[in-house]
Every structure is written in structure tokens, then in C-alpha cells.
Image: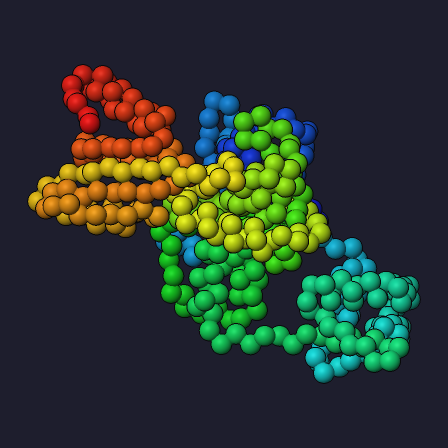
Length: 414
């Protein structure tokens, strides 16, 4: 039987799942935020959702639990289950089903008073000690459902009529199956799939980045602010110190890495008058504020910047100064895959074939340092290198010197 203690606030669950099952791999003895009893309660709750996907490793410090998923067998993200769990009071759940039974037919339109009369006469009259729902409570519940998009209202004179929003007909679920697993806020697609009969699925994912679903609520708020062209106040956890910092921002673009699935928000920092990026999994809170008058101008600015982004690092000032980088690669007769790989991975750069054995890569980016890990994969093929960022170039050349010393070889690089 599944553990039945449910939750209303997802922030706590987000922290526990990341600390213990995604990033932390902590044991019970290493948990020092709250009591050991709190750890056991949270562990039982999460394992009730993920029991089929749990693994463990016994170490000297104790038992470490972690998520273990075979993407060949699991085509849907099991972490979606965390979003489909919510607590209700007896009154909440009773009123929920009564309202939707009364408004079962989307053509039925009733006022609050008519709904209350129907509840009292048709649903509660047979009980010796029935629950009591006043008109104010019913109106608040209807307003909540209007905000969720599942109830609609229509005003006629002084009366407001409420009816159920018809269910959407989903003829083909292929797009939903793909969206739910790869898109930010893919959990929305998972909720929609719950409403249809299971079908044969077309997709299997070699690189399945499931942990991004833990940030769905934050991303949803960011998308909402972008749609409303509004500013936000975000609380961010410092990656180095663990301290909480607040930023007043205007969210502009969400950037998702195809390499590791990590998600960033490119935003305008109102206090510093600059563009910067934040890792979304380090954002603790994101509160939507007022509409920002210059949003359209900032969005055009961000789109222009994106054309010269290698990763997520943007310029530090309004000058949009770019750094130039170029290098030449050598490849042998049986290594034609090298220029093909370069063409495939060039991003915002350009590839030029010089002759049968040499090709040149050039790019203008805001931060040359972001290219260094990728450039290192071509070590021993680079015959010429030029970078306007002399510090980044020196780092790369020192890496080569370190490699030469490590392998006790000599070499000259241009």
C-alpha cells in the first residue's frame, strides 16, 4: 500500500528528491537539516512514488539510495508522479466531486445559489450529520477552478453562471509523448496523457534528462512572466556558498543544454543593467511582478545576443563586445569524420575546408572560455590557434604543456 501522507508544498519535496536521490546520495546519518524521523517520513513518501525505480548501495557510512532507471524499459519520466500527488481536506475532496457531478454536462449552467441548493437537497440531505458548505465556500472553490481553466463563468445581468469546460479531444498522442519527455514543463503533457487510453509509443530516448521535471513549477512561473512581459523577483541559491540571494530580473529566454539537459534562464538584471544567466535548478522562488514597459526591446536584445552564444555566458556590459577564435585542424585520409563532426558541433561558428587534410573553425562569441572543454577533444589535431581572449588562449596552451610533462614528451604548438 502506498504511503498516504500527502503534501501541499512541492518545494520541500523538490529539495529532498534532489538532495537524496538525484545529486546527494546521502545516507540517513548524513541528514542534518531536521530530525532523523523527518528523513524517514520523506523517504517513505518519495519511495511510495518511485519504489520501482529505486536502487541502493551499502557503504561504510550507511545505506545510500538513488534513482535507477533503464531508459530502454521506462519511456516516461517517473518523477512526474511527484506532481500528481496533493493533499485535500475532507471538505475539499467532497466538494470537488459534488461540483463536477453537478456540472458533469458542459451544457449545464448554474449560479452559485443553484449549485448550493443542489448540494444541500440532492447530495447531503441523506446524512445524519452532513458536511456544511456555505455560498462563500462554494464561490471560492469555483473561482479556484476558473483559475485552473476547468470551470468557466458567464455573466448575464446580475447573475453569474458557471459551467464545466469541455474535455479536449486528442486524436493523436504522438506529439504529447514526445513533448512530455523532452520539453520544459513536460509534466503538462503527462497530465494530458492520463486522460486518454494508452497507445503504442514511437519514442525511446538514449539521453533522457528526467530531473528537469523537478523545476517545472519554477519554469512555469518564468514562462508566465515572459508571456505577461513582466519582471520577477527570484531567490537563488549560491552554488559555492549555499547562501540565498535575491535578484530583480526580467526573464527573456530559457536555454536548455542538448548535452546534459541543464536548464538556464537568460534574464535582464534590473539592478545592474545587464544580461546574465541563472541555473534554474538553483532558483528557490520565482515571484511574478508588474509588467516591464521595455520588455519588447529587451527581448530583441536577447535574440541578438543569442546569435553569438556558445553556451549560456553572455556579455557583462551593454557594449556586446565579442571574442574571436579560430583554429585549424589536421585529419588523415581515413578520418573524413573529423570535418563532419566539426560541422555538426559548430553551433554559432563556421567551418571552412582548406584542403584535403585541413579545415578551419572560426567563431565570434561572448565568452571563449566556454569553448575550451570542446577544443580539448581536438588536441593533437590543432595545428594553429588564434584567440583574441589571451587569457583563455594561455589556459589552453598551459593545458598542452601539462599534458606534455605528464606523458614526458616534447612538442611545439603554434
